[in-house]
Amino acid sequence: MSRREDDGGPEKLEAQLAELRRLRTSLNQSDRLLHELRVHQVELEIQNRALREAQEQIEQSRGRYLELYDFAPVAYLTLEPDGSILESNIASARLIGQDRALLLGRRLQTLVAMSDPLAFRTALRHALEEKQESRTELTLRTVNQQVLTVEMLVSPALGPDRTTRARVALVDVSGRAAAEQSVRFFSQAGARLGRIKLSGAQLLDEIASAGAAGVIDGCWVEIEGAESVAWRSEPVRRKMPGEQLEALRLQLRPTQLRVRQSRAPAAGRWNEELVIRRLWPLMQAWATAPLSGDGGVRGTVTLLRATGEQGTEEPMLALVEEFARRASMLLENADLLQQAEHATRAREEMVAVLAHDLSNALFAFRLHAQRGLSRGGEQAQRSLAAIGRGAQWLLGLVRTVLDLAAGGGDEVKVQLQRGNLAQVLESACGLQELDADERRVRLEKQWPPELPASFDQERMLQVAFNLVNNALKFTPGGGQVQVGAELGGDQVRFWVRDSGKGLTGAELKRVFERGWQAEPGAGGKGLGLYICRRIVEAHGGNIWAESAPGTGATFIVLIPAEAVAGVSPQAEAVAGAPSVG
Image 1 (cartoon, rainbow, N blue to C red):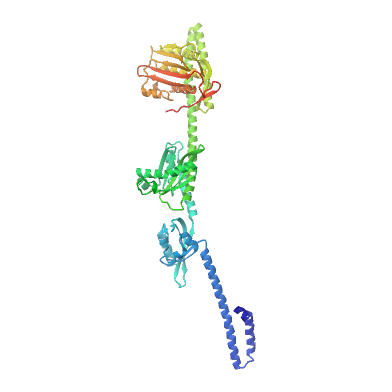
Image 2: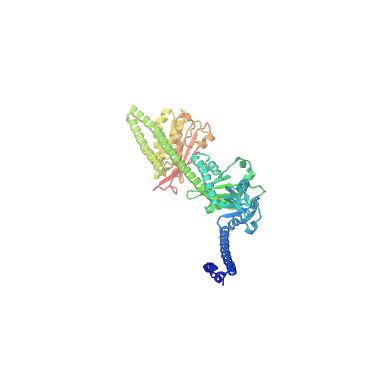
């Protein structure tokens, strides 16, 4: 039974005290003295009970305080003036990465590495000497090598011996710090990416330079065999000679291959096992992400860090993934711009082709018209027939232009039909006869009456007309142009040979390039032979030139006698625009 139950509780004691005071007046002196003693005894009992209750409350309060202190989610430490740990809660032991019992008595500065020790010592002095509260942000490397960004609040606290101690609260703000670093990185990197010219020749270098910003020490970009690397600071660039760069390339390669295969970001660290000769690693950690395009992986981008602390992988992966996404969009926009520029050039080419062939045809029409009007009779009939054939050819030229416009300028279409190539050659020479007479050039023709083949008549007339017209331009007066053809097995071969000054070896390599001219001052656009090559290749054939200086030039065309695979007589055959050197 408790003491409280024995005594009957405070109410019973108070009642007894009142009863004793009432009886005091009726007692004699000795009895009164005895009575006073009993009154004092009761009063002491009441005081003792109050003290016990106060002590119990204090113990309960202290227990609650210790429980709150120990299990608080914030890390709390109580420090001596020299930084030694007097008290530590569970959260602080977990944050530092050491058992709580092993923390007591040790200096905090020896347990964790601080990014700014002076700021910590200043905050400690303000709390102990000036009795002021201070707040600062530090980066700590803990016992288990984890890197944390913490907000440190240092305030004065009075110890049991009335001496001043420092109460330290550590709040982990690594997530917020990482977010701020991401914002700073993308504010700088995004601004640089936004200034890149999509049509610039150094697009890869510009992307790498944009990535080496903010908290990133270097950026490595590789796309389809090409690579570029940039560094945030000039000292790092100077420390990265060829040997160091090659060693870093070997270190990055496994991560890059893993990213290409998985199409997902991955982190990597310097691996001493991959080092042929021991080098100090200037870059110890990195994160790589794929550069996507056309439904696949075009390359990778790698963000590098000079330090390799544990716990930095996730923020780095988030940074590189977002940067790679933006870089991929930039590359895609550059491709779209290049396609648009290519389409624009192709349409310009279409207009130039039209102007080139129209000028040649109209010149021939004018000569035939002038000859027919001046001589009349049979000559007029011949001129009208030549003009009629030329008009038919011009209709084909219009179809060429329409095909180029419909296909975006990237292709030439041919409609293959069985026909006699000899008739096409005759028409081409007939359109040029009057021009040959005006130039005093003899036009010789030699081919069998039947040259059966599958070809587009209007397109092949365009080829023959351009070759004969080109030969006449470069043949001096008194010379000759020979046009011949033959059927050999499953191929038809025809050629145009002039007696001009010929072409050098270097000129032969460029003669079919768009815009190239043997004599730039002689007029024209340098398109005739380029057009011929595109049409012949659309037929599945081949065209080339043979020449030597002083011996004239021979242009030879070889086309299949029958439609080849992929070039059907019943369907249109398409030839992509050849690249121009």
